[in-house]
Image 1 (cartoon, rainbow, N blue to C red):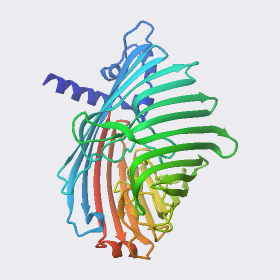
Image 2 (image 1 turned 180 degrees about the vertical axis):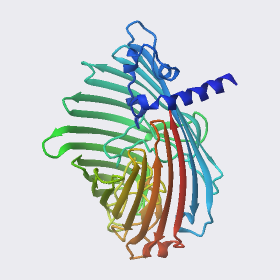
Image 3 (image 1 turned 90 degrees about the horizontal axis):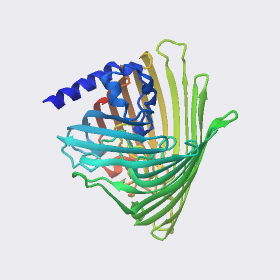
Image 4 (image 1 turned 135 degrees about the horizontal axis):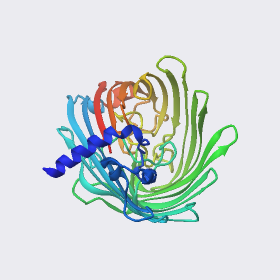
Length: 453
């Protein structure tokens, strides 16, 4: 009973002192609490975040984690006749971050996720009882300008279009990898190679292997005149078993891309282009995507309204049965690519996405409405899930319109520790879906509670 009381009191303390500490990071290993070494009277929570055990205070331990619950309701899943399916997703993450001097560090993180009450079959992304999610060692040198990281770790790059932590689904993803990072005067260069960690539903049974390999180089320049920030990257992928509308087999794919992003005077912009080439089951890969995302915030107006427009063109296969594959592979993107509902993934899509948001309470309460229209880029290709599995093949339909998605959500973050969100999504089936499925409109509702400590 005492450990439970201690944990509850610690969580309450974390919420109480939340306003005095910096925001939590999406990648928890990026957090730095060394500034607490100067605190002469730390609270219990601050000692939890920074506990020194050397006179020079360079040897220290920091701990943390999160609890998240999501109640979800899905009506007519996959545009079928399926009745309403209500279920509860839960996720627990906890980590320990040990620093030994200025150049050596060990980071470990456990993850557990559960799916309760789901009528349709669950995957290991929905449910993974308990596993070692991250465990790596950092070795830094040259005044911390060069860092080597070895072990199980999360990757996140750019807009998370191709490589992400997969935050919104129930189970985050990781790689058993080696990475070198160089940081110099507004430039950052990462070189990495890793094996994807395949999630399984049991306890400490997630494994990686040579079936799925990832490697690449990612360079960021934050000091570009006028346009501010530019990313340039190359990413390689090997999969022993890949499936597309045009067949199945071994995939060796290379992605070359660039991203231009930044903002000023209320404007934010994010433009990205990617070209892919390689081999799939004896076919030559030639695929691409281009996206544009701009927003403008009326900062001086009441409730700080923001308008946004996003467009994406993502290639699909042009001819079934030939010696070429034109289907774009998003690799390891953020799981809920077009919202928490995640009905379709970024392959063979032309998308126009408009949005509008208000902040009734600045930086704490946000209300957003967005509208998406999806078309198939190629009528010779089907539509895909976020993990690039085929939802529906091309079939004999020459129709392009997949459908309209209208969504709204209200997010409340009273402090750095707590997040509350309610959302609703309606997906109206278009002509294509009505020819390859029952064509029912999907209704989706979700309530999320997340507490970080």
